[in-house]
Amino acid sequence: MDLDLDAATLEFRDEVRDWLAEHVPTTPLPPMDSDEGFPLHREWEHTLAEARLSTVTWPREFGGRDASLLQWVVFEDEYYAAGAPARVSANGIALLGSTLFAFGTDEQRARLLPRMARADDIWAQAWSEPEAGSDLAAVRSRAVRTDGGWLLSGQKTWSSRASHADRAFGLFRSDPEAQRHHGLTYVMFDLRADGVTVRPIRQLDGVTGFAEIFLDEVFVPDEDVIGAPGEGWRVAMTTASNERGLTLRSPGRFVAAAERLVDLWRERPSTEAADRVVDAWLGARAYRLYTLATISRLADGGTLGAESSVNKLFWSELDVALHETALDLLGTDGELAGPWQSGYLFSLAGPIYAGTNEIQRNVVAERLLGLPRGSR
Ligand SMILES: Cc1cc2nc3c(=O)[nH]c(=O)nc-3n(C[C@H](O)[C@H](O)[C@H](O)COP(=O)(O)OP(=O)(O)OC[C@H]3O[C@@H](n4cnc5c(N)ncnc54)[C@H](O)[C@@H]3O)c2cc1C
Image 1: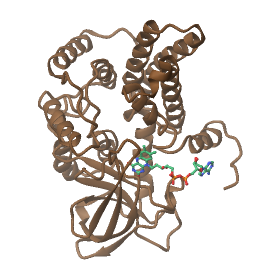
Image 2 (image 1 turned 90 degrees about the vertical axis):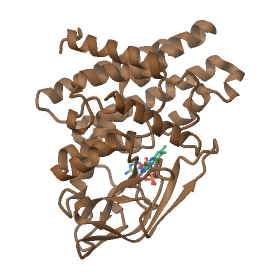
Image 3 (image 1 turned 90 degrees about the horizontal axis):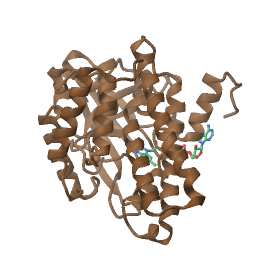
C-alpha cells in the first residue's frame, strides 16, 4: 500500500476537516446513553448524514459516498481529532450494516440501510443471554415458526443502547433438535413491538447504557430474518469479525487519545511515565499501520478471519494502558470526574465486550498458531 494519500483522498480529508471544524458542537453533548444525551446524539447523526458523512464507505444509494476503506480511516482520524460526539448509531452502521452487505437481500438493504445511515433507526445488538456470553452458541431464546414469520421468546442481556434504541438484531434458536451451532437464526426485531419488555440496567455513572430485553411471543415477519433460517451462526461470525477486526474501533480513536496523552505529559512531565507515554503513542501508530495492512489484505481479496482477534486484543489492551498512564499523570486529580476518568472506566470494558480477551486468545492460539484445543 502506498502510504502517501492521493489527491482525491487529500481533498476528502480537507473537506471532512473543514466540515467538522464548522459543525462539531463546542460544548460536549451529555453522555449518549443518558435520557438527555440520546436524542442529541441522534440529532448529531442526522447532521452527519445530511453531509453524507455518517457512513462514508457505503454506496450513495444508501446514504454514503462510495469512499474507499483508506478514506474511512482518514475520516475517522479527522473525526476523533476534532473531538466529535460518540457514535450512537455504531451498532447499526459498524455491525449490522456490514452484515446486511454480506447476507442481506436487496429488499432488506433498500429498506434498512438508508434509515440506518440517517439514524432514523438506532440499533442494539441482542446477542448475550444470562447463560450465553462467551459461549454464544448456548443461546436459548427461541424463534418458533408461525404464519408468515416467527415468534420470538426468551431473555437477552447486556444490550448496549437498547434502553433508547428503536430496533435490535440477535440470534435465536429455531431448531432445538439441531447441534448447538446449527439451528440458530439471525433475526431483527422492533424494541417497541408487542411482547417486548426492555429493562434498563443502571451503571456506575448513573446512565442506563445497557438493558435486558425480555421477549414473549414477539412476531417478526420472514423479511426480518438475515440469511437462511438455521444459518444464523455463519451470519453472526461475519458480524463478529467486522466488530473485532475493523469497523468498531478505528485507529483514529486511539491516535487522537495518544496525542492528548502526549499533551497531558507536556503539562505534567514525569520521567517515570515517559516510557509508557511513548509506548501508547507508538501503539496507536502501530495499530493504524496494522489497520492499513488489513485494508490491503481485503483489497487483495482476503478476509478478516481469525486475525480479527489479534486486532481486538491489541486495541483493547492499548486503550487500558493509555488511560492508566493518563490517570497516573493526573495523580489525585485523576479521581475527579472528567474525560480521562470516564475514558478509563470505559476502557476497562474493552477486554470484555466484542468477545472477551481470554476467548480471543483461544482463537489466536487455535486458529492462527495451530496450538491444540484447550479443554472446555
Ligand atoms: C461495555 C459492554 C458492552 C456490551 N454490549 C453488548 C451488546 O451490545 N450486546 C450483547 O449482546 N452483549 C454485549 N455485551 C456482553 C458481552 O458480549 C459479554 O459480557 C461477553 O461476551 C462475556 O460474556 P459473559 O459476560 O457472559 O461472561 P462469561 O462468558 O460468563 O465469562 C466469564 C469469564 O470467563 C472467561 N471464559 C469464559 N469461557 C472461557 C474459555 N473457554 N476460555 C477462557 N476463559 C473463558 C471469560 O473470558 C470471562 O473472563 C457487552 C459487554 C460489555 C462489558
